[in-house]
Length: 483
Image 1: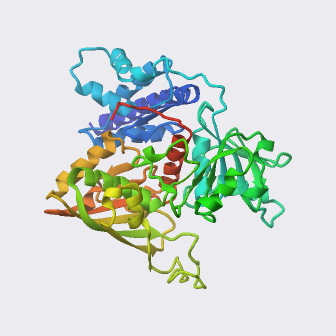
Image 2: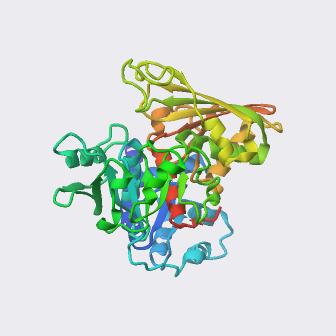
Image 3: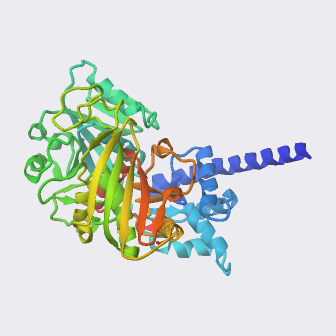
């Protein structure tokens, strides 16, 4: 009997492997030819391995009664590849489950056509030029945004990374060192693809993307037009300039149309949290900011909670991984406590995230306080939201609501939900969400609650930056099934 069970288990695994292998070229064709991003319950499956695809199907058991069978999703992919689709985000897993749950009065092909009718025969058939993007600075966020842009090059009609601007380093092999930092990352692992350098043209070529490396000490030294760059959005990730006047230096450069700052802006600049207040961006806005990683993590959750329960007041405590702003060993620092060794201490410091919430959610102005503790981990942080609500609730009610928001709302790309008693911070390295609700940790007592929100303060934030870039470039990917 045991031998039969072993044989059956292994045969089932081989069958799933074979089907997952057959899915990969279909997923790739949809992405390369149509800019269609496919996923399984919000877990993207483009550029993924056979094992990753099987695990994505397995993940569905945390949401539904059982895991999704590959036999149910595979035929949907086959149908999609036979259609002339426009750019879209299609959750194949949700379509498969929706089809199984409905009264099957129609065949699968008809069902799929009806669900995605809005993008059938809507392929733009562009020239492949897309929107030019320049990264001014190539630090932690700059390199991760570069990885995202390269991974999502698709058919070339979307966001196209054209150049990075950096100061000339002291090493003779500066270009090689820049490429090496893109290729290897101590936290996020190796770059997914191939990277070569073109010393003659001073460029890095990553997965076929030609990235011009421009050396400059200030924006005034750069003429992008000489590199064929036109109407570009400059992503300033240096943190040197934070107000409208100083960031306007970029707009004086030939070939630049708009600027996105990857930090909280000062003055009257719009601090945008994609998914919450990106509608505030108008054609007249030449400079906008992506706020902070913490603001992006907490604002979508606060919006969801406030919409349903109302927030009377609250406190946000951020347990944040240390950053380059701190010292490795004790040394002078202009800020209080941050001069003490980051890998050896928990450091109480201030955060502007609580006040910044009001810029994205004016209805919460004056209702939140905040503080931060920097801890000896290199990445992934935790926001603890201690809230007093306008009405009573329970942990189950709150969790069920937030779980639904993470799956079927306009905030499904910003909020993720996990319900495991074993997760720790390193489990969220590489998360593409702004924040992840830890359902097991939720506390509720009448109208008071405590929510724990994990976030990859590097990668999750970089994806939010990428989403704002899409908004600035007027690149919209409708989501199916519709929220």
